[in-house]
Image (cartoon, rainbow, N blue to C red; front, side):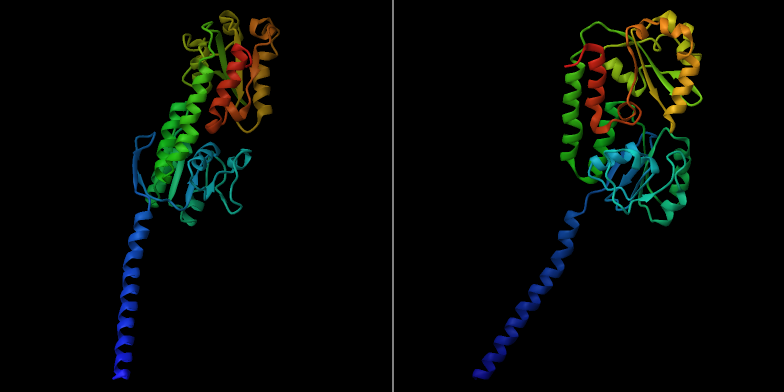
Length: 316
């Protein structure tokens, strides 16, 4: 009888053990499923409808966009070579280079099984890639960031994808408060400004719809290019002298700052009449730092506003 009891007890504990294993097996997928990020649907800046869920191999085709994606808690699997030149970005050593910003390598994206691509809505080759990436069944999202509001909208999408709403608070809402503090420094004097972009092959005046132009407008400036098309159509020193702006701001564009500066010198600064401008005589001509006014500032938006406010209204 004792032997029979031992056998029954053994069978009883075996049943309990197998039952527990069965429950653990059936519960494990439920736990994993509950941790999976939900799919996010949105319209990008080219009005494309996009749905994306938990991308594992994201390619970001611009340094500024890569910086924003990282700030949102994303990981950069592949990016364009300009990203490595941005000092505050730390990339994994295994990050794949996709070549130049203006013509990233499509074949490298396909061969490396990229599952999400973030692109600029302002670069022609990026737009050209849309149909090719679609044919390869790779989802894309295009963004056009010229203002802080553009950045905030993009970051909301990014943090929705990554599930990191805390980083939206940190890298958007906190920045907005700091920007508003700088805007409040405007003293009502409404200084007139000319904002120029210098390229290797020319110089263009930009109105208040540009990134730096928007910041100057927010700070209470009057941009002379807003009201006179002569500045956007056929920039000349004579027109600048006639408008006599209180401040002149310049950003150099492209890979060669020296080439852009040479173009600016040839068109404007080498002319003896340049030195007759009030803005030049009073020391109100400024070449703006690339990291704050050519690259998208991202987390440094308040710093960009403060840089301009210090010039316009005196340092704090």
